[in-house]
Every structure is written in C-alpha cells, then in structure tokens.
Image (cartoon, rainbow, N blue to C red; front, side):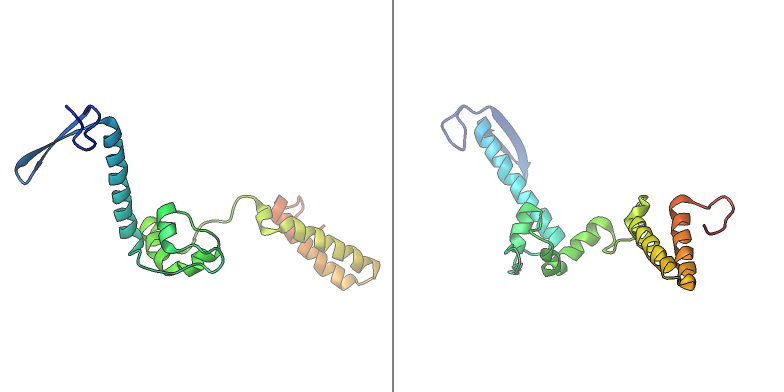
Length: 164
C-alpha cells in the first residue's frame, strides 16, 4: 500500500483511531510519519508555551539585543540581561507557575569568600599597618577588632577567644 500523504513510498506505519464513533485509518511511510510527528510536536509546544507564557501577540523588542518575545517563545532563551526587564510582565507568570515564587529565597553559598571576606581582611590588614606606622593606636584597635571578627568568621574561634 502506498503512503496516503506523499503517494510515492510504501506505507510502513499504520494507525487506527475512532473519532466520533467512526474508524479512521492512516497509512504513512516512515518519512511522512516523522514529518507529521515534528509538526504535531511543534503545535503541542506552541500550545504549552502559549499557556505558560501568555499570548505571543506582544510586539515588544529588547532595545539592547533586538530580540522579540516570539523569538524567546521559539528558542526558550533570552538574548541578554536587558530582556529580563523588557519581558518582565510576560516572564513573571511563567516563573511563578514553574517555581511557585518569583523572588530568590535561597542560601548564601558555603564558600565564605562569596562575601568577599578575604579581600576585606587584606584591606583591613593594610589599613592596620598604616595606622600603626602613623601611631594612630585608637584606629588600630578598631581595625584589629574588625580583623578578629573576620578571622573568627573564616576560621572559627581562636583558642583563648581573645582578639589577636
């Protein structure tokens, strides 16, 4: 039997559906079946994106990268950081649907240098050396306390619990 779609190749895929009580049979070649499956998947993806992200009728365009919302719907990727601001109204409902929230409430990473503590410590140590050279001992005491607090955060309590 020939493919009902292209009428050139031999039908290797056979489908039967009952629609409104009537038996509908389809006989397709592998190539036509694959093409129809891609088309069906595309329509399903468009319907899901439309449901998640709202109508694609918006004509907004990112002024930085030139991406429009329909390109985002097709690719699933934004063009640049500015796109988040431009398409905020369209993105928030989808983010809320996926994550349940639109604000980040996570934890700070375990790497304590994420807070910039090592850079701050080095800067304070340099300031302490300068204060001692200039004999500003009151300032040096304040700086020493700050250095102690950072070291305590980074390395835990010192043995005797006193500043260095």
